[in-house]
Length: 401
Length: 146
Image (cartoon, rainbow over all chains, first blue to last red; front, side):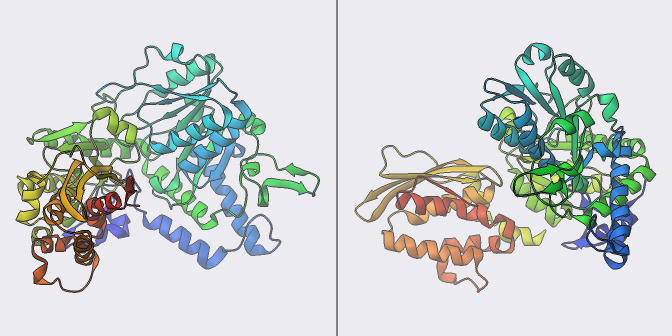
């Protein structure tokens, strides 16, 4: 059994006098010592602005910063670190793509295809792009188990220019088998984008094997800090895409008559980036890689399966999302108890879960529920967390009986 | 578990399980919808105003125990009040769920909502119906808690 709890300082505290069972990693993961130390060290020893200083601090930190690009490229198996753009996170990456690709590809009458299990970050930017460029948003449906219905996928691609799909659902835990869909999209000349927010910390990701044109994720769901993430896109696509925002390092030269843009990836990195956070993201990738993602995924899935078996054994509990291929996320509802009331009781017992619509209102509408209780697992969870979760469910049911 | 008993007092649980005046009112003189985008709670409040007296008030909608109980209690307490009296009740309610001062015993049934003040994340649940009734009385169609 993997035991990494001691590496995460935040888990040492007590919540309302109880041991903390942190089961909200799909929202944001806790940070290991290694990440905290790397950011602390950066601030104490190397801090300055990057790319433009001739002094040693700037040179040193620029090298550390750019080395993170290599780490991200390696994590995703990109061909080159020049295919990695630093972003503010998944949502920022998707907005960048929707804005820039929208401008490059979308014309009135075109379609953008997303799935029925997207969170708002992979719906709203595309709706905005569709409105701006006169395109239409179409939806790949799913079934009651929370699996995509892909039989008519090729027909659905008719008129589609961009296909943007979630790798792992944040609500249902479904791991989508995206490689065959991307292959079909590619055959139809459609650009494929993958929202990997919930995938990178829990699955080995290989963008070349997936064949996608772009892939986005956030560091804070990967044991790293908030406010930073990465966008992978093929060199051809990055070359073709217009800049998203202007200013700072994204230029080669500026005059009042004309601006020449820097080559990718810097073309897409306007302004001073979150430097310390990028360093933190690099440390998180190092930490994760040392642990072995596949091994962590087995650990998390075993805990989730244990929790789901225990939940299934309780009367009045209904798990939402029964996909055959699932990551370590379980969403459920309780008869006669609203998830928000459950969340408050859980909190009193030291159990941190997310309750609500998880920024995926269309998923809630599909299942005809206002909200769910979501327990999501990460490397630092153990069997005691599962026990606490089940105790919290029982206590909630007793209180509202 | 004891602090939870302050939040989920018997009266709250009773009102959430058996909300009073939980139906649409047709016809009515005023109505408004309330929405909490954070948790997805939705409700609609109906009012029949006779002169400046709230003759009838009812609600429908989905929400947690706190929001339902608060709405239910509100319909009981607002009934028969003049607009001025409702404004006083509204102010008292606001003090109870957000204030720091000890709650005056004279606040009667409203005092059962005092537990909410210890749960900042739940204050919006308790206030949604009240904001919505206030919006209805001011002829506003809808209100959001963010």
